[in-house]
Length: 104
Image 1: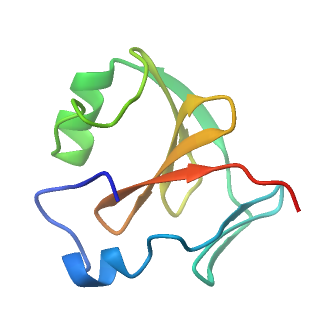
Image 2 (image 1 turned 180 degrees about the horizontal axis):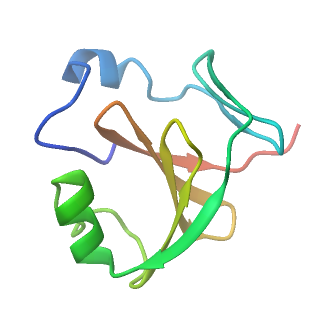
Image 3 (image 1 turned 90 degrees about the vertical axis):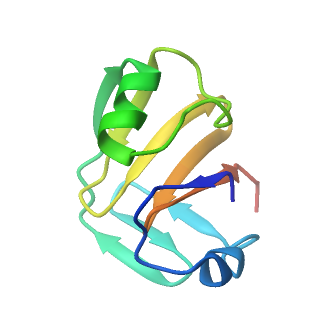
């Protein structure tokens, strides 16, 4: 867990329980800790880092480790942010989580 918005729909304790959980991103589905977003849209946009986090997430982007401008991906049920090849930031219920690509 990297940070949290001012208003979140789960507690810090619930968010900490998600650390280490698998994120599955495929063309047809997004799944985080068993919660699925069927038919994700994956709409990409490039945004000013500080402004987009301040206005949309009500959180500072200072500790996120994201490039500026940042590529944001709206997947209908949440947002992803591209960090570097093989790494994304996942926004989930008001919290931001680092995710690293692994091979099966």
